[in-house]
Image (cartoon, rainbow, N blue to C red; front, side):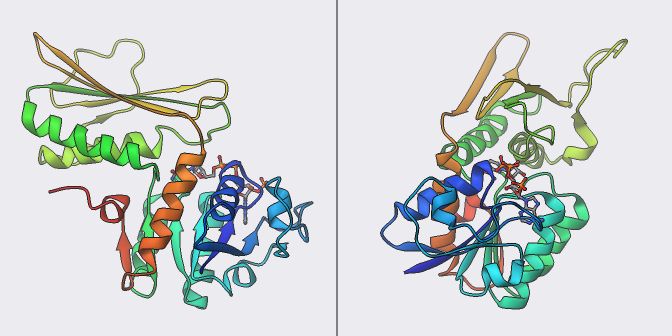
Amino acid sequence: MLRIAVLGATGRMGINVTRAVASSDDAAVSGALVEPGHDLIGADVAEVAGLAPIGVTVVDDPQQAVRDADVAIDFTLPDAAIINLDACVKQGCSIVMGTTGLNDAQQQALRQAGQTIGVVYGRNMSVGVNVFTELARRAARLLGPDWEVEISEAHHRFKVDAPSGTALQIGEAIAAERGQNLDDVACYRRQGSTGARPPEAIGFTSVRAGTLVGEHTVMLASDTELLRLEHRALDRATFAQGALRAARWLVQQPAGIYGMADVLELGD
Ligand SMILES: NC(=O)c1ccc[n+]([C@@H]2O[C@H](COP(=O)([O-])OP(=O)(O)OC[C@H]3O[C@@H](n4cnc5c(N)ncnc54)[C@H](OP(=O)(O)O)[C@@H]3O)[C@@H](O)[C@H]2O)c1
C-alpha cells in the first residue's frame, strides 16, 4: 500500500487529494499537514474531506506529517512548500510538488532536493493538460517560427499567481521548441501605446472570474490562418488524480527531479 502525506490538507486541492487517495485501492493517507495555528489541527483528515474517519489526524509539523509516508503531495503556498520540501529531504520522503508560483530560488531548491529524494514538479497535474502542452509544442514546430503565439488562461477568483503555471509551462515548451528563452520573448502586459507586436513574442492573457477550475487556449496565427488549441479542466479532481498517478510512478524511480512529461512518457 502506497502511503501518502497530504500537505495543505484543508485546501481546495488537499481535500481532492485526500478523496482521490481514499477512493484508490492501492494507496492510503498516512499523514496530513496544515499551517500552524489552523482550527483543524487534530481533526481527522478524511473527515476534513467529508469522508468517514480513518484515524489520521491533521498536524502542523511538516516532519511529523511526512514521517510515515512514501510520498508527500504538496498543494500549499510557495514559502510553505519549500519548508515542506526540506522536511521531505530530512525524512527521506519523495514529493509530488503541485504548488505553483515558485520563484527561481525555490525552483533551484527543488532541483537540489532531487539529488537526495524523488521530486515530481508539475505545474499542472492533469493528464489532458500535459498532452495539450505536447500538442502545442508540436504545433509550434510543425508551423514554424513565422506563426505568432498567444496563450490565454482563465481561473477562479482565488488564484493568487498569474499567468498560471500551466500557461508558463506551455510558453516555455513552445519557446524551447523555437530555440528561444521564454524570458526574452514573453509579453505579459499590454496597455496604452504598445507599438506593433514583435513577431517573435509569446503573449499571455489572464482572466480571473468566478469559480472557473482552469481554462487554457493557445492561438497560433499566420497572415492567412488561425489555429486554436483549447483545454478545460472541469473538476479539480483531475489534478488530484494526476498527482496520485505521479506518486505511484515516483516511488519506482531513483532520486531525481522529474516532470509530468516523464510520468506520462510524453515527448519525443
Ligand atoms: N499543479 C496543479 O495541477 C495544480 C492544480 C490546482 C492548484 N494548484 C496550486 O496548488 C496550490 C494550492 O491551491 P488550492 O487551490 O488548493 O489553494 P488553497 O485552497 O488556498 O489551499 C492551500 C492550502 O495550503 C495551506 N497552507 C498555507 N500555508 C501552509 C503551511 N505553512 N503549511 C501547510 N499548509 C499550508 C492552506 O491553509 P489554510 O486553510 O489555513 O489557508 C490551505 O489549506 C496553489 O499554488 C495552486 O496554484 C496546482
